[in-house]
Length: 304
Figure 1 (cartoon, rainbow, N blue to C red):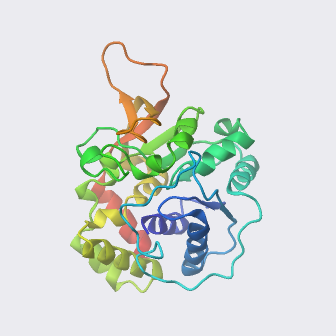
Figure 2: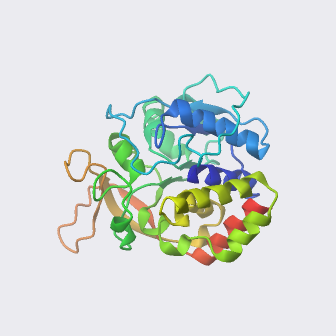
Figure 3: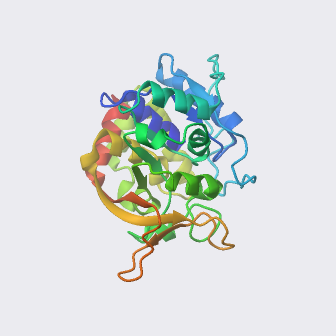
């Protein structure tokens, strides 16, 4: 449901053009999320955008049960009618490769879920990182704020859900050489990301279906004892693409743990002053977000 609002933000922004969309197994399996993607396009009244489906099972072979639940339909119990749109005949990985090659040097990738589809695309085209301006992900937790740990969303004490679902794919992507920007739990679940009263009023007053969806999502998460930031986690990555001045970026050495009994899916950052493992992948992470301007942007776009 937070992915849906983020995609609405991407489609409505005049700063972005969405060329393709792929569905991945994350909070729900990909045969469910692909249907939700098509429903969202109907809701937004978007013209033709190719939508591809990724593998049903993550690279590691196991699909963990989501401890959060986004509702039985994955969209806060919205139960939108099935779409008559057709899923693209290509696999998600092939759709990514074809789209990147068509716009090579003038395209970015944004991943709002596990990195399964990107890892599969890399197997088809190992040169993919050199053709992409930037890969922005919602993923990981990096210890920049305490929310990296207190808001852990994976099914162990230190992991974030998107990485935890498929850490094997995440490790492959981290090591592939992308110009990678990660928005982690440190920022994406910060309490300052909660909708303000004036934002709620603007959304409730708007006749736009995406604004009404946002209101429904907020009501849904709050009815279950969570805060409204849960509806905006993925929008922070789209906002960083729309307006890079919203974020402060830090470069770190970081890799993904795949074997630990207590730490599978953990994004491990080496911050040591001495004996640092400089052989680890170097990535950019968002260390802070201008929350006031972020909320202004999201509310204005979803309400307009």
